[in-house]
Picture 1 (cartoon, rainbow, N blue to C red):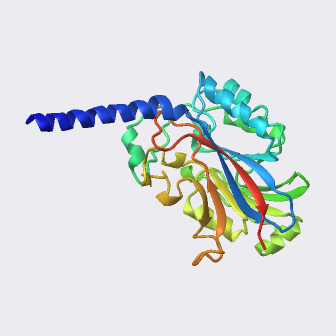
Picture 2 (cartoon, one colour):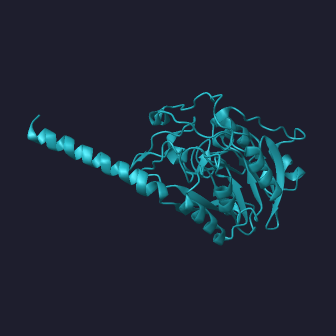
Picture 3 (cartoon, one colour):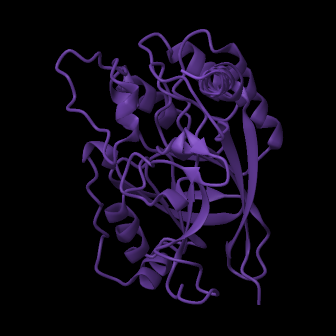
Length: 317
């Protein structure tokens, strides 16, 4: 091999090693707080602030993550929505409850993700780059104490939206809620309404100011169901924002059938917002990039771990 070729190969190897070190030692712990405004409330209402937590994938010993999540309580939001995949270890319950303890004092709602049910297992990290990275659940997979976790959330007053509907009174507003169990495991069963009223009638039926849809994984079928149900805002996680992204290009995958362009952040579903060309009838959708990774793929590149404060504001006009 010519000297110039050896230098090029050596340079690429050095760059790759540097990127791997950054992704595994720095960025994966470089937590970010995102703040997003969603113009979705009726005119004249005061803003409503929601903390969206997702995909902590917490394991024992992640002290910095626990402290960072606890510190988010200083934001003093009106409501918390947890979209699942909270932990990734059989012994993570104490650390998780410590992280979430100040948030459980707020009105909240939650759904479970696949990694709330069973502990992750070792697999080829390259599978994550496939269009569908799912594997059959192994009979030997260790079941996590998810029933106890859900019971603790409910005891604190958080609404369990596992294939069900509920309502929540927050800061003088009535919010109607609809959620599903994890679509990534095909556990979603969209809950029927009590009657066959249209979405406007549904909101009037519960005298609600706002209708929210909540899911762990933003599969297109669920987003369509929530839009048809009249959701003003859909809140989801699961994607990790792609986890491995390319600068100026974005996420490589979403680990579901959502397009890469909406791997994280605020978007319209199925298209642009109604005030944009071609977006008539769209619903706001927020997808969290999440705060963790599988312990078997502890990497983040060009995709910092995150939590988000959604400031719901009145529609202009």
